[in-house]
Length: 420
Image (cartoon, rainbow, N blue to C red; front, side, top):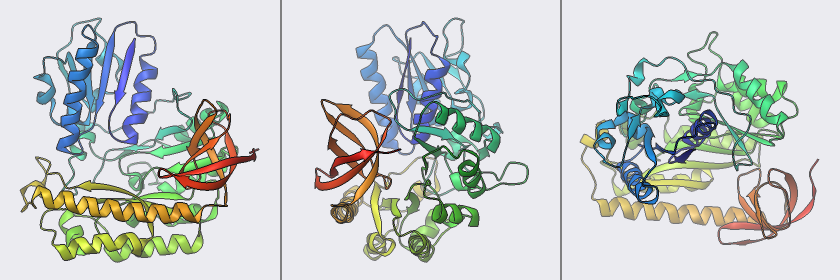
């Protein structure tokens, strides 16, 4: 039996499900660790997970794959706990994970030479209420802090027909929510005939799969949002009112040194435009604290961006130098400064989230039930706010809930009626 341990992003979550599906008939005792490489800390945690796994399963064959395996394979090849290292370029090859025939310890190739994204259709997701679809992989941009393009390769897209077919299959298997995922979603289609955009794809899904109740976009680069995407965001209520934005900073000089493609003013204007057309929209964002050369004044502009953009859910990273990136060669801030600024940003984010949660008390929300144990159901609202209710509700069902309070950074509610 092949087990998969997924570390890192939503795309890894999807690809781990693909691996489980591909290896479902495998009778070998294999444990696969699907790694992340976004920071040096992520690699350290992967190594820690591998050592723990070896202690727990001394007889299992341990295979390491994912971005860290692709970017720094020697790190894992040298670990005695590891039996094989499989790069992202071979992740879709089930044979690379088999021990039926002898293979080298490292199964790798040049990720930059990959030109297609695997179109593996999944009928469902183990123990998940929502389904993820990989529509795009890789990235053509070279942000100075980011190593991921060297683990994922250049941007490449899945043709719309294959994506729509998978959405139909998932809806037919009673999934109520589908999430579009990838490395750089707003670059979708630039490598396909006719150069369709993410907005074109979203509109086609909503039109051609009318029975799909809920569609989500995992994360976008707001400066690349095309007119069709803006039209879908503001015009179709089945596209959920939650957007996670790759903002990274709120100071223009830091954004320039990051080699980002937007300014502070661009980010604010985007949020204002979307919220004016769709007032229920809630924004999350990635923000890096303590980027090289960031002064106190520059950091204050990132802190102010939370209010200026009306952000609710923050994903804060203290800057971590990644060997091989231009930012790692820039003048670094002391670790204590990075850590302190990250703490301030997180506190600001908690204040914004608490204010939003408080504003929802008394409202009715449609909730996707994701877990239910001992009469306590948990899920997320359309705006992706976590919510708990005392009810025996079926996992994967949509229910209408009245919000009655807030506790432990989540909404509390009670069911009103079963959604159609």
